[in-house]
Length: 125
Image (cartoon, rainbow, N blue to C red; front, side):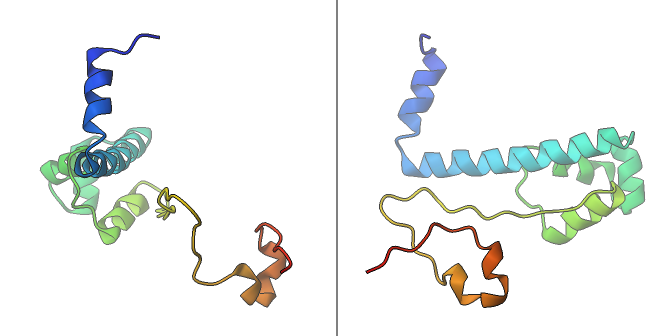
């Protein structure tokens, strides 16, 4: 498939680490905004109705649903989730790194939960 001009432009821009970082953060904000809007719509609520439930303004709900907004707090996300009968889950994922990933503690140090640990078997040295 032939690359479009935009594909070529984006590929060039992604070579700049600062741009790539901003692009990644924008994707995270987009995900949050889309999830809030989708949950609100599934609940059959308008922005104004959700705002009334949360005792805030329709403009604030619009802001929270905007892909460019990065001011979400865990507290505000919990309030929204509660109003929309949902749960908030934050996931930290390891950044892509060259070489080995270093872990602060091995799973084996938690003997009570050792069976739940699904790590690769250790090599004998």
